[in-house]
Image 1: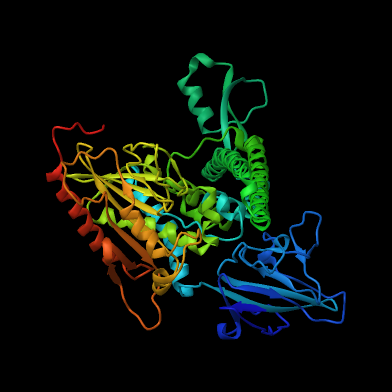
Image 2: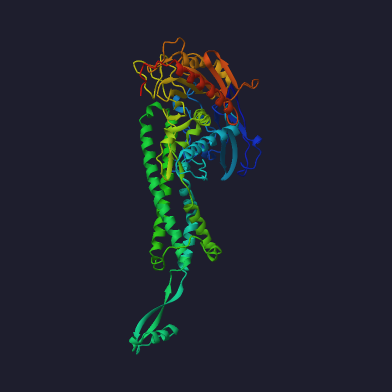
Length: 606
């Protein structure tokens, strides 16, 4: 049952005897718009029938039953209407039964179990104001942009970054080396055990002086020494044969093992730090549990538990591999072997599939450059498209300013220490700021920070104050001279809505129309650190840019200006970036002109 614009309708899902999600025509899969109320029910006269929806395991769905002790999988039973999304605004449903965490756009699989046989059905959640491809591009863009901007700033640049793909909940807590080692663990152990049981050696000779009366082997060296050393009359310089394991094959094997052990040690250390950070983040979020709905808290708790489980299992596997390889290094045949002096693997070993397998693992680990690791919240921010759009627009704004010639100096991803071998990119939290500058201006780009009101006073980091309760724009650009004189701000608000909705819809807080909110950002703000001469009609917020993803079907407006310097700019993947750059350049230039209005007799705040 789906509800769209107040209209309810029923749709039947087709059952398949095999899991054919990747092969069926997408047009045969039911599409449900994001943020639409809907429930699901299986009709059956057999009470033993059940169905599973693995993608919903972390959500709180009323009346389902856990199928394992850990509660990691749930069963849904016939003839019960399960609410999969209701929205907390739906007052026709008991608050305890609300499932108000929006389902992430993507495909969902239902596994129906009937008479011990499995059947499959599918539906797709589609983005509300973006098409599916745009949503995927936006999601990919965030990690790619953050990674790229951080690397351009880092002292140690790298040419290739192995991708960290978003996958199951918790997968993003594992960086690429850990994921690689876990995938190769069994192959590495098999190869090492094979070479351990077939240790390479050569027969060598060791010479020493022995009494002539003893049984001793005589060779050419013995005969030469009889002539060269007449003082050793009565003794023979005789060889003793022994097995020598310090051969290139074993030298390279030792190098492979030492490298993998070192990476295991560093990865275990990293996972320990990530676990501590994950637990700390969860404890911090727990302080505000009372402000979350039950279904939101269930989702947070399940995601946290799954993340801890993934990390703990990975650490245990790496420790196991490390201990095994360390034992091999203490074997008699390897303990005295030296590491190879030549960095090129001998061709004869390249032809050996066992050595070749280990060499590929070694090469992948050894020749990596600097790592890019994401804060744990990057694994879930995209599950809410409205938040994804806000974050994406902030990064687009940052990228636009950089392309306009402003150089990042500090803040957010630009606070990494030079020389670090691993960049842990912090998430874009509320209040995040990036300081940029060029040869004439200094900018402070702020994400989702409330504007204070009286009796607060302005500061360099928070120069704006407001009379209005409409006080939390998504993005703010504060513009200063290089002497720290405040020239004014540009406010940007990212709204995951169509343009016609922006012009007519009321705010969720009940403070009038959304358009009134945008005007309030400009009309109701002021600052106590300005040093302008007394000039009439200087608004401290020079302009407001409203960013939105889509127009109504019958409109194709890309930039629209309303009264009071409020501009509506369509911005989505592959659309609107040039318009955003042009408008930012224009509005910053207007602010720069205010430098001539400064009262130089008033000292600027430093």
